[in-house]
Image (cartoon, rainbow, N blue to C red; front, top):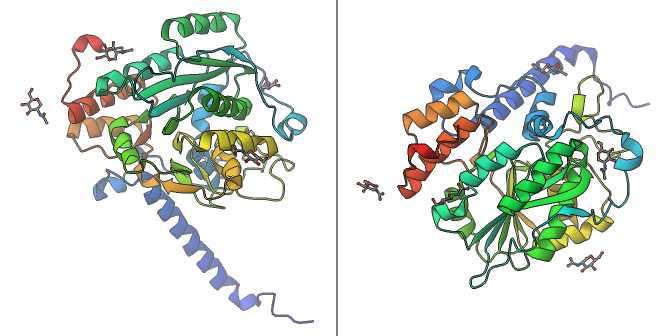
Length: 383
Ligand SMILES: *[C@@H]1O[C@H](CO)[C@@H](O)[C@H](O)[C@H]1NC(C)=O
Ligand SMILES: *[C@@H]1O[C@H](CO)[C@@H](O)[C@H](O)[C@H]1NC(C)=O
Ligand SMILES: *[C@@H]1O[C@H](CO)[C@@H](O)[C@H](O)[C@H]1NC(C)=O
Ligand SMILES: *[C@@H]1O[C@H](CO)[C@@H](O)[C@H](O)[C@H]1NC(C)=O
Ligand SMILES: *[C@@H]1O[C@H](CO)[C@@H](O)[C@H](O)[C@H]1NC(C)=O
């Protein structure tokens, strides 16, 4: 037999050295890649201020922003130990989730054509988050676009009756709630995403762009609108922070995958995901919405909604293109955002994860002043 496929023993030390070098390079690359903008070289060495990455499971966790989603999508009253195999491998996914709360007029405009619809994945108990969003970057009248931009929050059902009652009142007050008849859990997020695509196809035909965001994503709406103007009239386009084909490992190891465990019969035969967008925010051209929804009927279900909607469904759309916004995404820790505000640095990121409401608000106020020369009176402070 030919021996060439086995490595001679004397090369093993060299192999180890090479592996270590490769590992280190990948580590450094990822570190700079994720924490790039707005860091001085001095700060680059100060890991405590930024998200520091030490192993592959942390990388995928952070990039997929699942830790964040988990925080918001695990209502305490709901049993989250879903029996994965039967339900999660349904083919195709459950279609036509019934709607509990709706407002079919959200996209309706009398004179002008609606250009943008923002749909935000939220969950029933996050009423305060939604208030924060309505008073910040989702308040289109603050930047002169109430007729050009509409918004809708996508919710499932809470296990708590009182929460569902509050949601009803909120829907009546603001008219921007779409609630589906499914339990609002992490593993039901694809149901939420498909409910959104279907609703948008029916109620917002002809819209130019649809922006999906999570309710803890801060969107630099001024920059985003500029970016979208550059893609006006383009078709079959997804703009997002994009992870390349095979860049993101599928977490299957039960000792380290924690809440993000993917079973062997989910996504069988792959150890990493195809190309897909980080779900904190992405933009679809309007023409894609009905197409993507249509193809969910022939695409096997997968519960991670980012992967499903921006990775699996687009594969079926001929001529689809991605614009990678990865260099424009920020993953900031609160303190860094504060530093940034205090230093009056110019703000170039499009999407940022921000948990603390007061940081969110302060950044917004600063941004508003920076872009529109609008100063909100102190009484507008929510907190
Ligand atoms: C990855 O790092 C995190 C935090 O440092 C740690 O809790 C976890 O156990 C590590 N996982 C592996 C597989 O080493
Ligand atoms: C949105 O902005 C307008 C104009 O400043 C303001 O009148 C309105 O109260 C704001 N809405 C919310 C929900 O903050
Ligand atoms: C949603 O998730 C819950 C718990 O994770 C599960 O019991 C339920 O079957 C899922 N689907 C729907 C439609 O609620
Ligand atoms: C929907 O999918 C079918 C194939 O399943 C295809 O023939 C049809 O053109 C699609 N329609 C849209 C609007 O994408
Ligand atoms: C912003 O407002 C200040 C004072 O109201 C004014 O002096 C300044 O020129 C304005 N800047 C811009 C860019 O409009």
